[in-house]
Length: 93
Figure (spheres, rainbow, N blue to C red):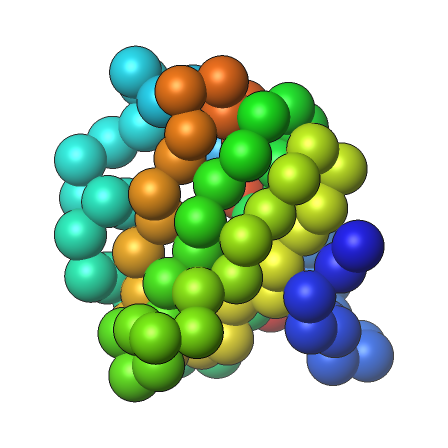
């Protein structure tokens, strides 16, 4: 299931390497944001992951393998990967 929709007209810019619970950069576990004008698309390839919007921490997005979540520009969030998580993030502008 995809949570959210990328706006039409965006172009793919790049993707991160695949992260696991042990390789995910510490900065992604803390509140951070995507740059203004840039949209993210987190794709969970395996396992589970909790995606938390900092402005709505009581309603995390619970992802399972095959799910994705659209990350709005300049909206603070963090990730909480499960032990078995494998995911990557695409950036679109």
